[in-house]
Length: 567
Image 1 (cartoon, one colour):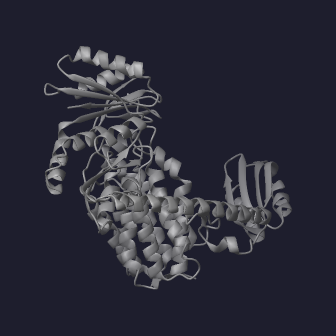
Image 2 (cartoon, helix red, strand yellow):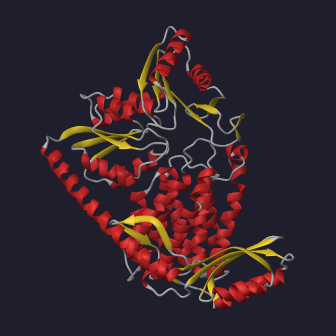
């Protein structure tokens, strides 16, 4: 029977199955990042964004209506958004939920309209949309949905075609962005979106059966994405084994084998090549599965688990863990409330500052420049919109400047500003720590917030930034052949130097940042660099550029051995 409508309970199941599928693929998606730096985070950011929404959906319980579900998805993803990819994903959800919230059943026409709204909302959220990204993949799906209106009302076929179009356009993203083609990858954000859609589709057609998402939390509890935890498990034994085939399985043999396994269980996965077949099935009689498998060859790596026993043990552990987490959360909340009340007793300032920072030394520098609240994060862990909003609540000022200090955090900061109504928020689009420092130095207490925001933003162009890290994989980018383990010197928009010697790479990077107008070179050394080593590097650079003032500071940042700024 064709599926022609989707109600709220099914949509919730689809959404959460999509979240799980994305979570399962996040490390692979991280590896698709173009730059071979050790902080590829698209998969992580998208996963943490959708998991924040998953927690909100899980908290709705069993009685679902479309409006409440839409609100949970939109609010949870908006506040939990991390990184550019996470913010764009949250905007897609925001637009989509606007299109469905007033309907109790979704058909092809409503879904098509919602997909159009999703794309429109996401494109508006990005100042300079770039084709060949997640936006392009989303637009392709929405356009295909519109094309299918009137051709079919079967949602299995409808959504299958939409996802197929998304996958095709995703495969074409290297032709749209030369940097993707040079690196030999598709767009990581687009791949993440496709994984969400594929997981949702599998739930719609009944393929998704394992509905536990590990690690997504709300209110201190462990989040699961269906009511399976409260229901009787249909088949009690998770059975896995490998068949070493007597002869290669032909298509008919494999189909017959799968049909037999389906007759005695569910959650079936059978993967074959010319020599072996890997089998996963949930059944009440593992012996039957094993006996049939033996007719095709010998067996190895047999594993049988009693899921009912494991399930009960997990429920007990989850309850204990939830109680412990809730206790810690309550204690933290009381502590934060006391700190907030104490802060509120202080005189309210006209202007305050929030800065994202990445190391102990950098933290101290920002505090010394007057920053009221430090958000720990940066390249290795992008703070969420929720983190920004919490920081705003902590700063007792009417006008607050946020310094993201990372190009992948600016969208989340802007999103926080759009959600905050009680205070005036100014996001200074700092893409690096040195830019954040420059912005603060150019703050004038006697000027208005608007004048300061304009001046601080304008002065960002006066500083050039370099970062030294290492490559996590072989690649070809910016016309440079890079091998895993090489040191890389990255400028504001490209990789400027590559080599086996960190000191030489840093000097080559600096040479490409310095021009005839340069007067100050600042070196911030990371947690893995000895002070003496950094001081010697500074002395060498001073010898090379005697007319420049050289400053060496402890940054303590992870991943990046040196941050270099030239003004």
